[in-house]
Image 1 (cartoon, one colour):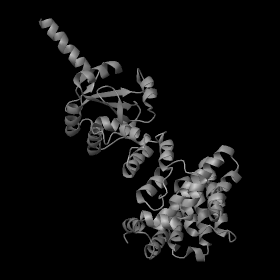
Image 2: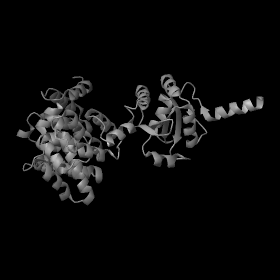
Image 3: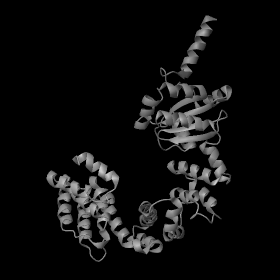
Image 4: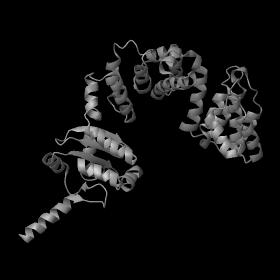
Length: 392
């Protein structure tokens, strides 16, 4: 009897691994046996699909799973499983569950039905809330997706589910929202519908985007956004559609045709934007990009404006060499502000400031910082940065 008891105890510890005060993860069982254990104990399964090389996975293991609050909640509510998705059963389960990012956190019913999902590392509070959502049918990702597919969600519920689905790059999101938006005539006047359509619907047609652009004032009012917030988003939607057309053909006319069909006024800017991105991102040629920018600064026929040019310099600052910044500094010093630059002069000062910093001219950088800081239209976030960096 003693021998049997010892064997039973050994078997128990071979199945459960306690990480100190941390979450107790099942060890030594295959997936089918884990599901059988969950059915027997009538507990949901928490499944951490990880990879050995994954930094966020290691963070979860070291910083989150070891916390007493996390452990107390998950140990009481779930059968907890960690599995390397690149060894053993991992690859087959990764394919079955659609895991291609790490960590992927899954939740199953005691009967083995997948009901909830999250991708990426979380802080302790978020991780506990994730578990609570997994226990709530009104919050479960896949339960809600089933209702979304059957068109059983309210507009707000669809908005909330779509936001989560977009973050996880849900492959069925476009099909579900395409069906959902059929017959919806108040997209421009309903804040919830407008946000869902604008932010999360990936399959907008050219005509639908054209309608958004044509009615951007109404859309901005509905959303409660400023034009300054809305216009970059509309442009990014157009650019992604045009870039997709270009990537399919590698013919710039395909890119231009998309903008021409949606918003002809944006064509010249978009062409310049594409050329800069090709030079910096596709060809990794900052000298070519620098040459293009110098040309944009002297283009009087189709001027891009200092806000756009400064954006191409500041947004891609890490792509340029010190020699490029010398050239850009010289070109910027020759730039004459135009009527379209009114109210945006600070962009010139910021671009020149960056060039001065990169070329080691600290005195000029400080002078430009003071100049930009004193501009009436400089956004508060830039003022904060300049104030801290230059003691203004």
